[in-house]
Amino acid sequence: MQEKAPYSIDHRIVCPGGEIRYVHEEAEVSYGNNGKPAHMTGTVIDITRHKQAEEMLTQYQSQLRGLLSALSVAEEQERRRIAADLHDRTIQNLGLCRFKLGALRGSQASPELSPAFDELDKIIEQTIQDTRTLVFELSPAVLYEFGFVSAVEWLAEQIQKQHSIVCVVHDDHQPKPLNDSVSVILFQVMRELFMNIVKHARAKRAWITIRKDNDHIRIQVKDDGVGFDASNIGYPLSEKGGYGLFSIRERLKLLGERLEIESAGGRGTTVTLSAPLDMAGKGVE
Image (cartoon, rainbow, N blue to C red; front, side, top):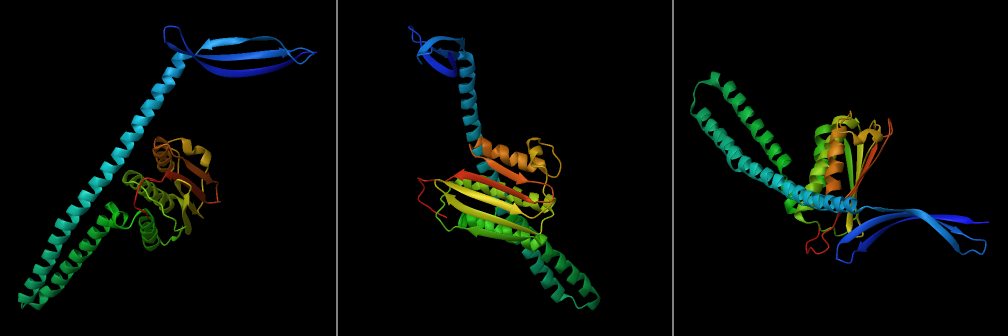
């Protein structure tokens, strides 16, 4: 009785003239009663063009990763520039207006104008506060002064303060050096994840865990919200904010990293992501 054993393999062949070809071989080996190969039948297909296309795609993906990283850094640099302009010009000018308004009110003897001065002073004060908040939201200094983990803690505080969602951040306190581009991209991703919780999750609590995992930083964001059908996240225009998660996953994918999503209706959502640490970096967070 003969037994058959199928196999499939790709080969790289160097032709006599130096040309490199790739072939895909599928075959089935028949063994005789003595257990030795009796004969083999199969096919050999030239897949050189397919392999060349794969190599070109890999090169394009590498270029896209570089462009994406540069774009993210450029976007954050522009945010920092706008934030600096708002702080150095707008806030200072508003402060000067408030000072001059106070001096003008002091020189006025007419008491009926006092309510108008008070109202203008409150408007200017509120505008200054709103502009300061916008400056921090555009480009929080904490990211550059204290690092990624501190920036996530700041984001969590803002969500809890502004939206009454209790956010608990747990860090393993292990050194997690990140280069500038990865740090910026991760911060943008975390900001998007927080916004998804605020806009769509209807959650009361959220838990963020940040830890070192060998040569990667691993982040988990979990909420107790309404959840959603995670199988639809592959579609950019899926309902309940799917586009935000889709864009995050695609951005991480281009960086060579991954995003894992676990969710179901009424069971909340858990998002897990990772990114490479800068093992050659000297600074730690």
